[in-house]
Image (cartoon, rainbow, N blue to C red; front, side, top):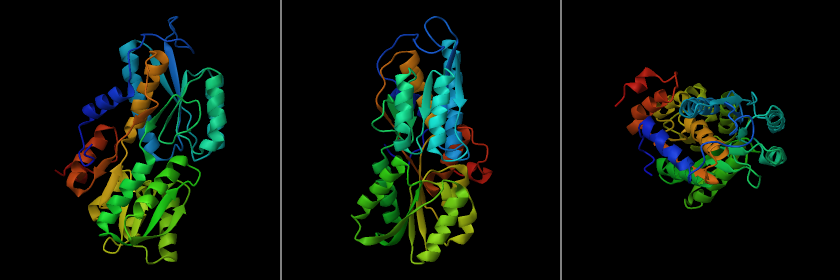
Length: 344
């Protein structure tokens, strides 16, 4: 896949939906309130990491869109029950998994804050007859039936490759790591570190963890820069720090370069200014869209689905900033700066 290419939203959705589907299935399903007996409601509990993180809000939008399409296509009221805690808390996620089961939801869609704390809750839900699918952050070794997301080690490798290119293969860098308990982020960090070994001129000074809010992430970057004034580059395995404009004035693009995962509207000024010459965008809208389609195919239509539905990143730079901005708007983002929408 050419990650610098941004395809129109209808193609992205249809291609992703095709990836999510495997084999042929029946037109009705057993289990829960939406069964072959004619019940008209199929409910998916969506439990992401944080309801204040924009990437998960875009995933919710995608999930709701898929639910509306499926409802119209099959004559079933497909509902997304948003049970995401306001901030990262695996204990609350486990409680909400149990709540979804007790409420009679037909399936659960989960992005795990801490896989170790959630494997029991996932397995119990499945044992009680409620299938679980994960996205973004998996619960490996659990009884979940499928995971939609990228190859996290590859994501870390791609971040490091892009940063090395921006720094001409030399300099001191830091890694911004998010939650230390998130298994997907640990794999990305591992990918960064392994790839950095291919650049003898690059030194990693440290990995910095933080609460996954824009304010906490940006503050951690500033603290790290003060503690290690020689930092010349940041490998950000999540875009938290760029969701706020604070670093636009705190950091000098002539002295420091950032490569980050994610490319949401709030982050685009960092590309425009040159502080983050490359962002590797997760199509976060598809987290919800593809996952809901996959759950419906597997649970309601009895189709076979792959255990890992692959998600590819999109490379965003000044060369395709306008195209990507329009893609975000097509996905329902209302805060895209018109300046970028007008770019070629």
